[in-house]
Length: 179
Image (tube, rainbow, N blue to C red; front, side):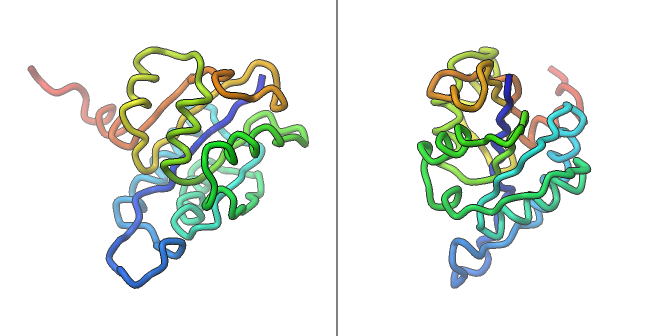
């Protein structure tokens, strides 16, 4: 079995409209959420041994903040095709994740990550799948297991085992709201 972690970059700052999309930094909310998601990944045992990241500034900064909380040891590879590509590029990159990696994390963007995650997951908990179908917000991750190795990764071949959004962390900290 191999595991794919799809992590959408944290909330970016739109305050400088003259900046190129590729060069947008993280917003304050993004800088707040990313370390918390990194801690949740570590606590869930989802520490990758290979990392592929978009070249966009907001994705690289998200990875830096997440990695600091995960005690990540794997070196990241920065690939323009994650920034520029669609779901097929995500699938192709996952299929080619050889080199002994058991857990691959990709850090990138919507709509490609949302579409790829939906298409890759043929199984998984109904509540998780429903949440993922509704929206794949910033700084959210999906954990998808594939029983037959990277070369067999394909549409519908994965099982969604976790889907965590920043708001899920807030709900866990504050507890359920009174009726």
